[in-house]
Image 1 (cartoon, rainbow, N blue to C red):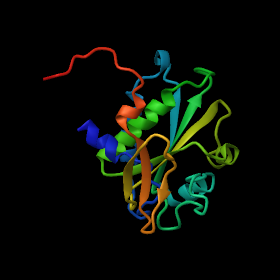
Image 2 (cartoon, one colour; image 1 turned 135 degrees about the vertical axis):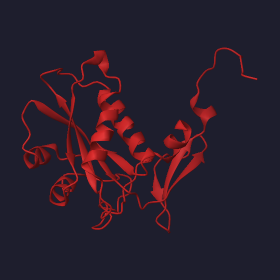
Image 3 (tube, rainbow, N blue to C red; image 1 turned 30 degrees about the vertical axis):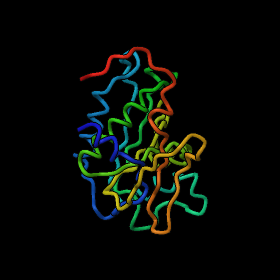
Length: 197
């Protein structure tokens, strides 16, 4: 069920690094993104796939992890992602950046969740350094990096009241807590009174 996939689709930041993700799996996930909607059907997104340990290490060096966890520099060796998908925009197709990459990333992550994998969207990226690592044609703009692997992290969703902090945090047992506002607190107005029986 979609509801369960969305609940399981969290921002995982620690993985079983040695549990490999195949190129075939990465291509299947990108295919989900390819089939997803884009603005005016421009299809401006392109992708770089990596499951090679040496290239993964280089990509990892370009990423900043979990801004709210000030005393954590990211996953340690052995808990790093087993694969990456870099989402690019082909600027010869369209210059402006819309929402297509967000839709594509969500499709990729839901597909990964369905396959028993975890992932994390990373926008805090040293794009100049990454561009050199992947020797990228100037026509491509780096939009997002998706880290993927078999997660070794427990994530707990905490319902919070209005006024409470939405900052994620880790408890003493290294469980990652994600505060979420209540449904009734985010619906501003409801028009109509029909309810299903």
